[in-house]
Length: 254
Image (cartoon, rainbow, N blue to C red; front, side):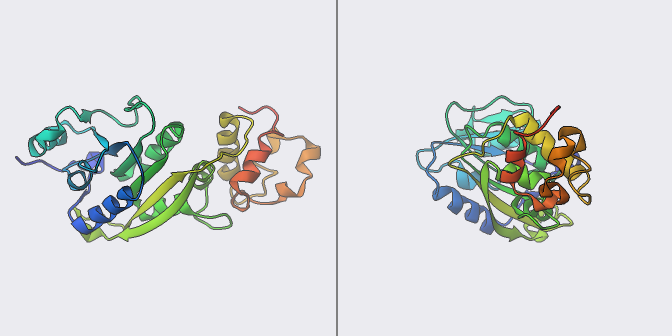
């Protein structure tokens, strides 16, 4: 049984088992009961992870053709491959589960935000991204790559950049390098006034990242508060702890 590649879905399928085995090794080091693969495609990674010992496995795939192909290739996965949109789906498991995948480039950041919504149930993610996106998620303050995605992810997860994956490891080869990162949920989350105000504050701050924070954040703080030296910094100079602390001082958070 054959399948076709769909550019509209950002499909670049792994063909180098070396990197699949590396991801498998990371998963084997983590205690888990349940595992969700996002975007299994032709099953290159699936074949190495669906039989992990004592782990309940499910996969979510939007492309019906790929679901049919996977059911044909791996009949033992009958009922475990969900034909749905990950970004729209309900939580697929009760209790804790790990997320893994070679993520479609065109929705990879949205996948991270979805996992952040599920953070109480997702202790770990191991994902392959476009290298630039992976570096943004892992970036530290004071760097050009540090931004909204860095702050919001690192508030709740410790991020480790694991390894690069070159274009020739895929069919078709993308025009960019890829990278695999690991997110491990923090033992404790920062105290924030509300998740909504935290997200809004960070997004507003980086909306004018080259300006001092007193400019983009002016609507949310009094003139007296804006005299604090922290507001003379730029968005990339604040840690997630700094942003979390500021949520308690905000006025009119949207």
